[in-house]
Length: 184
Image (cartoon, rainbow, N blue to C red; front, side):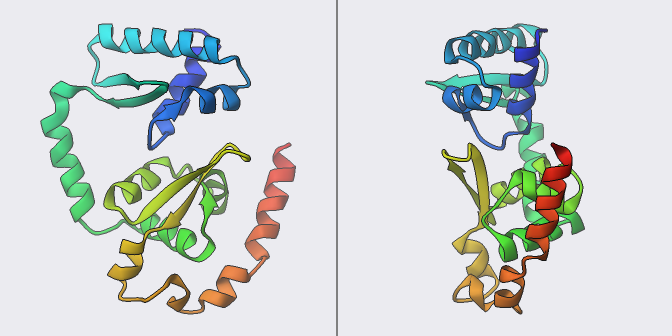
């Protein structure tokens, strides 16, 4: 598998939603035609390999999904995941998003020190957070949903305990800047 296909595969794997060709091309700094060619080859590869993972295409968007023949077992799993209690890591991520949001996945990963892709997917499925893509920064930013605020019995997010102090505290911002500059 060539490098471009590998990178597309990785991005589709961690993405919680379909990715547009333009978004993939921007992230990979490649021409759209090359991205489409490689993504279509990946789609064919997964379709012919009969694995539990498939890639689907809807117009100019691609998404990695579970194979249709595994739908029943996946539905049971998702039902358990979305009705059970939140794990400690999910609660930590949700708290960060509530107090610091909107926050990008990269910043959430840096704050928690681990990859939060599956946690974000779980919180999105539960309807506790939502993601909005920022075209200028080429990143998705996550914030809590109205349903989450309503579930807590609050009128608005600002009613969370110590919200104004914690939301405006620049300690995390300074830490993120230090981490980002050390990664360069």
